[in-house]
Structures are given as C-alpha cells and as structure tokens.
Length: 131
Image 1 (spheres, one colour):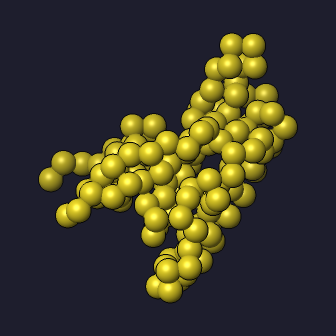
Image 2: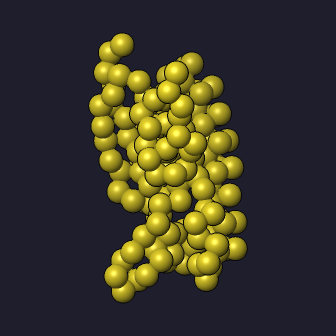
C-alpha cells in the first residue's frame, strides 16, 4: 500500500489558563479523502464548564460527521478541500476553554489504522484487540 500524508489536530480543553494545562477531548483526522473524528469528554465531569463543553463537543461531532459525509460524496468528483485547516479551523470554540491544536502531519500506509491508533492512545476510541 502506498504511503500518503495525513493531517490531524486535537480538540482540547484548557483546564488551567495559568499553567496552560490541556485535556484532549477530540481528534480530527484527514487523509485527503476521508475525514474522521473521535471524541470523549467523560474525563471532564469535574470541570466547571463541563455541560457547555460537552454540548459544544457534541455539536462539533455532529458537524464533523455531516462534513465527512459531504466530503465522501464530493471525493467521487474530486472537489473536496485539500487541507484539514479548511475543515476544522483553529479558533476558540467555548469562550477560551475549548480550542483546536495546530495541524500536525504524518505519513502512513493506512490512514484508517493511523486514526485508530491515535484515537486509542488518546482514550477517545477503544483500544483495538489483537487478532
């Protein structure tokens, strides 16, 4: 399988503005043809803005799901965007508590497996079982 470039960015909650502590609650992953998104907010139950953040993450998940479906249809005609930054803009989402990280890039032979590995390491997806 040929290698391809993937782009991904983390959806993070800033839990302490003084120390810039962050908790990753989402992952957007783009390989040029498929947009994947995973999220989990259970670790934030004790955070002061949990309800608002949970609502915002749910809305982002719905938006990403719809966008992924549209992109899948558009890819048959090759009209989709080329960069993740165009799909998941890096702006503050809930006050200044929920933010996107910078876009990161990697090279992989299997984009879906790369997404699963990242999502599992971050606790956003179940850890895949070996054979």
